Image (cartoon, rainbow, N blue to C red):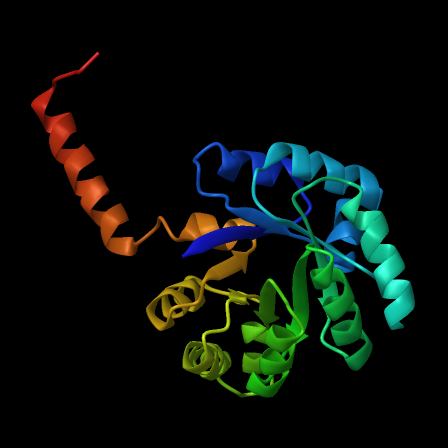
Length: 217
């Protein structure tokens, strides 16, 4: 499973990228706002930093304007994935832009039917939002499983990019189901390395080592 980082913070991306675990980056208008930087400038810097796809989202609501904005965003770098909303106009724009050979990330997916349409429109990635379904007392993992089943049934090549990841359990469950990618905030990715028993074991090892009175260096 590939890891995308869901942020527009350069330092956080760089730290994870140094470990070799960053396969791509996703941004959206909210993350751009949080970064406090110009969308074109920060997106270009991210594209220069990582080799994989960098999702940059359009803000237009109508298909023709989405296509125009998509063309503008694609000029930033070769690894731009144009991010489009899962609306009827978004699907129209997806069909045109994917037909031009561009990477497309169709976002804000909340049903298998929507994911099916996105795949048929040529989406490179489909982004189902797990956490937001959990927020309304639905199981977001059910959606990941449904999309996986539909795509496998018909051989769709669209990658399932699990989004709105809130916890390490979300990441594990996505991996078990077979999501192609998860995009998660840096803090969630870093928490994958932690476990209370690891901390407890290390504490005991260090206490025992201190009793030996020895040094390695």
